[in-house]
Image 1 (cartoon, rainbow, N blue to C red):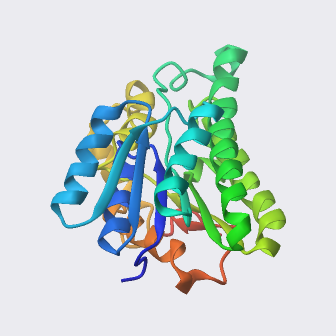
Image 2 (cartoon, rainbow, N blue to C red; image 1 turned 180 degrees about the vertical axis):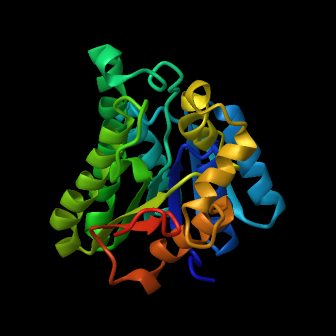
Length: 264
């Protein structure tokens, strides 16, 4: 098992990406501590992990609340003695952020995803790193999207937020790598199983596109090399590798999982 006896804390574990990573980490032997702003969906994922023979605990944690993050991490340390991986898959409601031309967007709505995503990533990364430094090891991870590297219409400040998080990944790595902590990211494109992907890639531009969801998926898939979109399972399998000791040479980078639709 690639993550045998590793301890992973996953933020946003009730969503499509976070839950897929939780299941994949647990199947490879990790003890997963699952968090979300709302407890019910996180408990569902924890029960699935336990039913499959894995180790999981669920907790209600607001990943924008520094004290809540601190207290939860301390509870993990008290129980198992360390944190090996911090994985941030936190998302925010974006119905009011997407679908509005930039020239018509209110500055507060433009700034909201930038402030929210970067705050959550910074807080979870910083607090995890403080607990990893004494052990001189650990992995901090965050999911972004291709919005960070290519211009797309009607996504407000979402693209700027993704770019900022990738910059933070590089900066955290530059400071933490000498202390044995790797900081890496994953950059998938649209994953049809993820509700967030549907919202961001399709519903925000549905009126202008004139296409059905199925037609829109086919359009996105046509831009990839294998002419299909990535699955949550495939993304989660890469996350497992990146969290494992086999990826010890990778830090300060975001892995391109757009299947060729975005050139490096």
